[in-house]
Amino acid sequence: MTIKNVTVIGGGVLGSQIAYQTAFKGLKVVLYDINDDAMKTAKKHIEQLRTAYQRDLKITDKDFEKGLQQLSYTTDLATAAKNADLVIEAIPEKLDIKKTFYESLAKVAPAKTIFASNSSTLLPSQLKDFTGRPELYLHIHFANQIWSRNTAEVMGSPETSKDVFDQVVDFAKTIGMVPIPLKKEQPRYVLNSMLIPWLNSALVLWAKGVAEPTTIDKTWMIDLGVQVGPFAVLDAIGMKTHYNIVVSEAEATDNDDLRLVAKKMKERIDANKLGPTTGEGFYHWPNPEFMAPDFLTK
Image (tube, rainbow, N blue to C red):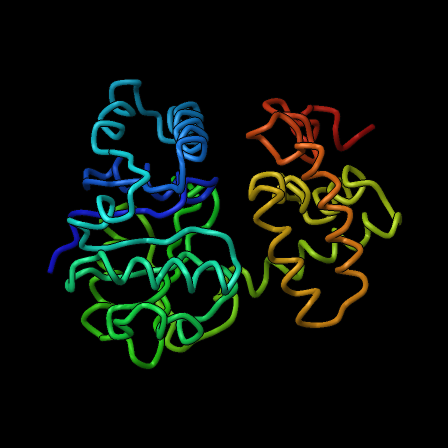
């Protein structure tokens, strides 16, 4: 089977990027979210991609509009799944939420449909039994800013069909990704095995009052000769996304430092400091302080 019709579940920061990138590359995409308010936010996320695609991919408004024409939206799960060759789920990193979702999806999706999660922390083996089709289930994990940071990590469980795995690798290539096939299950895949400890170490320094986010980023940028630090990356990921990861890890490891981080992050979430989508995260957007010419020298 060639994957032609894709359904994306969840129009958050990364879900909206997956949906648009897939549509931009010419596939039919249905984006599902739970209610009209969530869908309104998803559409806002997608429209905000226009400037980035034009800047980074050198496309025109007409090119961007072609992608939008491949997209449709619904808040009805049965409608979203009815023609899907592939469903990509990008909902919160909580096992009970994903369990409930997959049990509902299994009741309405065609028997042919491949189910995939964009989960960054859970393993396919933790979710496969909820799907009712473990041989058609795997994970495909995208990095934030999918159009330019274009890796797609593909990871199956021991029960995932090799043919299904290969189809999803081919799908990743079709939508402009560089596939990163994993030979075995690995928590956090390749990218997040390295990224999350780095981000958490920066967050602990901030939460414990050791240094301000700008100071931490400045240190990293100068000493490694790179363009962004951990707090710029956290803004790009989105506060809520990494907050859920921190909460889960704090509970799993009984780590007081991460509990403090979660508390401090929750304060920022409650103040609507979520990142670029709300105009403020650790930086002010759309012109974050770390991009100022004198950021590293003052």
